[in-house]
Length: 234
Ligand code: HEC
Ligand code: HEC
Ligand code: HEC
Ligand code: HEC
Ligand code: HEC
Ligand code: HEC
Image 1 (cartoon, rainbow, N blue to C red):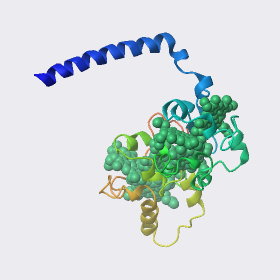
Image 2 (image 1 turned 60 degrees about the vertical axis):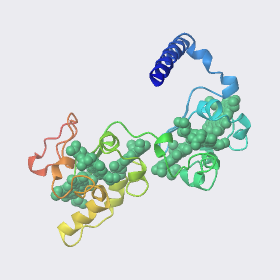
Image 3 (image 1 turned 90 degrees about the horizontal axis):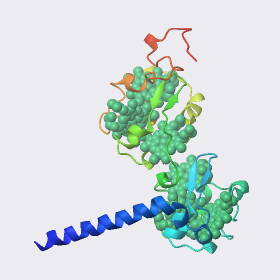
Image 4 (image 1 turned 60 degrees about the horizontal axis):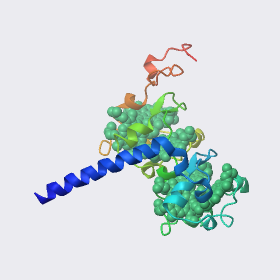
């Protein structure tokens, strides 16, 4: 039938295209990107206070922006200068500065969305160590199995910074009913989802979270009954 023929032709064309682009990629990868025309090829990566990445290619070659749409009125042509200014932050972006002068939801996607386009989640588990040891949180489970976006947690529940729960709870005084206190604590964080409807409930499966992480010798296991005093492996 016609459609079959058409798709065979398309497949052949695709195969030819793939073959040529494969060749192009292997033999002249360095030459295909013109840094004079599109800006430095190497991504610009910030690491403090959190990690984020900017690539010239996606802005110049792909989105068609000219150098002067950013240089010098938004960014100096020097790595590190925005950071030095001291106000290179999400707050400034929301006020329309730096990345936020375009990433406002009209020229380009808003910085209140798609956190994962500019930021990347840590690959190693985050271990909460206080007030009780060995609560393990893995981003990959939540992103893959849970199918969640960064915004599901980082807009309201968690700061995008290790230790912020512990910091917030350090001053929290544990008064009155222990059970009520624990429920409040869990409901504020993991329990916003781990409520037996969106994800397994925290009230039933304590040791799924409160458990030593495999291979992590520093941990003695969050299950207090199994914890032997003085048995710390560092
Ligand atoms: C969408 C915004 C944007 C556009 C468009 C853009 N740049 Fe940049 N450029 C940046 C940012 C952000 C930095 C890093 C500035 C900082 O760290 O303060 C940068 C830095 C640079 C640097 C310094 C790199 C280094 O390692 O010090 C050069 C050179 C540069 N850009 C060249 C260009 C050229 C050439 C073009 C046009 C082809 C261009 N840029 C277009 C945003 C842009
Ligand atoms: C268009 C790119 C972009 C998007 C989208 C984006 N960020 Fe950022 N973010 C940055 C850059 C650039 C910085 C400053 C340098 C750094 O610390 O990495 C930053 C900094 C931060 C910081 C450090 C402290 C602060 O407040 O500035 C946090 C936390 C953060 N982003 C969280 C988020 C969250 C949560 C989202 C999604 C709701 C998000 N970001 C979306 C680019 C982006
Ligand atoms: C002059 C306008 C402008 C500025 C300034 C700007 N961007 Fe963009 N950015 C765009 C446009 C346009 C696109 C493509 C359209 C879209 O994705 O919404 C884009 C796309 C992106 C993408 C998606 C690339 C992809 O994977 O397709 C990322 C990530 C990004 N920008 C990060 C940043 C960061 C980080 C900064 C600040 C350091 C920044 N941008 C500053 C205009 C800008
Ligand atoms: C299910 C909730 C959840 C989701 C979804 C999630 N995170 Fe997180 N993230 C956390 C928790 C919890 C922490 C640790 C907070 C603490 O220690 O107080 C954290 C911490 C971080 C940190 C700080 C790491 C450090 O070493 O300081 C970064 C960066 C981060 N997340 C990025 C992301 C990005 C990018 C995405 C999306 C791709 C994402 N997260 C999705 C819950 C989540
Ligand atoms: C935004 C919602 C959300 C938040 C907040 C959240 N989780 Fe989850 N979590 C999920 C979903 C969805 C799954 C996958 C479905 C399931 O296992 O019930 C999951 C799965 C898990 C698993 C894997 C369970 C298994 O059987 O493999 C663990 C462990 C876990 N979460 C721990 C935590 C911890 C610790 C926190 C707090 C630091 C947390 N989660 C916060 C939504 C969330
Ligand atoms: C979805 C993950 C998760 C589950 C399930 C869970 N917790 Fe927690 N729990 C946490 C996190 C995160 C903290 C705060 C960080 C820390 O203490 O290490 C915490 C803290 C605690 C604390 C310390 C509070 C303090 O201030 O002294 C106790 C005690 C506790 N949990 C008991 C339990 C019990 C009992 C269960 C089962 C009924 C349970 N947790 C189930 C994640 C979980």
